[in-house]
Image 1 (cartoon, one colour):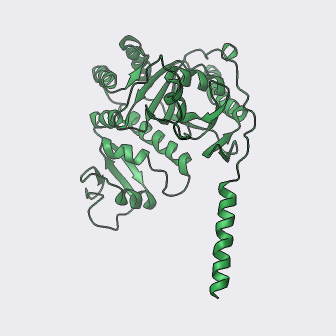
Image 2 (cartoon, one colour):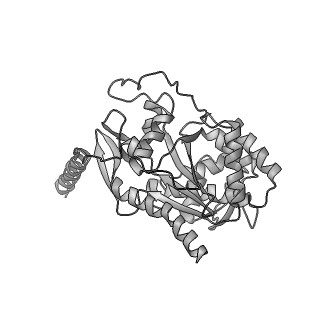
Image 3 (cartoon, one colour):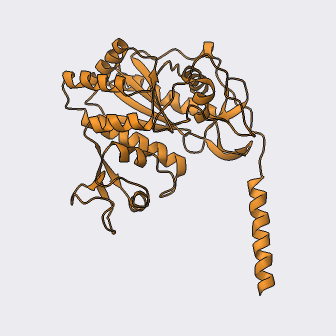
Length: 336
């Protein structure tokens, strides 16, 4: 019996080793040349929101080369943008759209090689990431705001926290995590999530710090990074819902808070106020959401010892075009 068990164990190790080393070269990635990107649809305004995987972010200087490698490993000097969400404000069709990108999507880097999308800021800078996303999804993206975890938490706290519906697996994960006492409370009982056991699924109130922890959940309930992007969109949509009844003076104060709580941005105060006016005029509309890549357009791939997702970017471009072009359908229906 011992020999049989040993043989089975050895076979398992061999199979696992075979899986771990099963790498292949990715398929070529076709992108749209920057000068050939489709014109922006009338009335649509795009803003790229980025969040690095650091509690205290670092500004990447614009005049440096991509980080060198040490002992075969990348040097993550400025953090990786694990949070990537494109906010589209459509003042013509009266729509707000959130498009999130999975962090391990395989892309064509500025140097023509393959890489993960969340490495681009650290290696090349935010402007390069805007250009790269534009070329991959055929939407011209120029304006960005880059945050770290602490800044996101500060903004959530400024808005009074956020109410999120948790399932059993998310509750179990957060209870095992270092959730600060009093930072997550049951909406019905007011009980701290960390006090005792047996918490039931339901709506919980999060402060900023724990809202960030919630958005970072990846290993709970299945779905991996796909569900993590969904949680980020959930928090953003919920915060947007809280802003539906604010006054313009409140909106201006929120703009000032955001301008104080970002690592870097290419949007000045005047343009930020203009974006706020767009959002304020759309505060009564339903938030729409899209994840890229969509279902059926992605395949897990190990490449250069990296766990990545090989993406059908043509399918992404089509999904994005359909998503944005619905504006014309909305206008046409209203005119009829």
